[in-house]
Image (cartoon, rainbow over all chains, first blue to last red; front, side, top):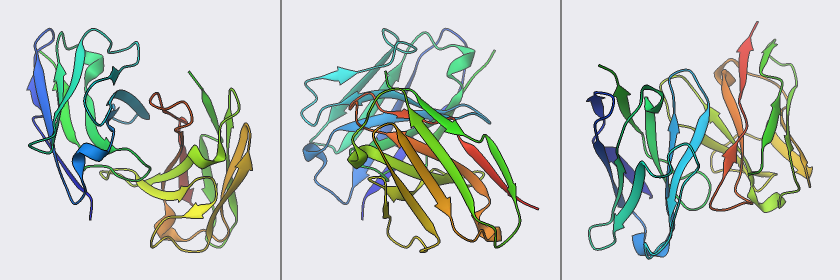
Length: 114
Length: 109
């Protein structure tokens, strides 16, 4: 059974940084692309970042490009999202997702506020 | 980026009624990469339909999907109280830059 467990969320001031982690189990981690998707309170779903199975390539939408960095440690079955220069509009629940539909973690809430 | 226009934004239905949600893509997508999710308050999105028309594990037969090219639909043949949720379409055809529809909130009269 695929399991994805996110940690690292919390309250952070605008302009500061935060790093999210996602520990994966139940599948061969280094065989799959991984992504982060977020959902602002009461809003829809927005893709945030993706990384190839080797970690060699990463992809971002314009809304976070240059501020967020996705990475992975295949030895530790862990996915990361480094978020810098955080803005109030980055407030959301962040979900770790695996390549292929339907593989989502429970999410971790990030609140950017002074 | 492929934009998904999902409609309606909300539905109020009676139990036993049939409801249909549509999802129109700004350009043609592969039906293999069009999926539908159900999200209940406080929960993560749950896969209902994958690859346009296949029900995910444990999903009742009253849920179905169809479509091709730029036009897709999701149907609940007889709505039940437990179906109250927000439903989203998602496309992965432009991998890795996948996108979601804006959501349809289903309520029961």
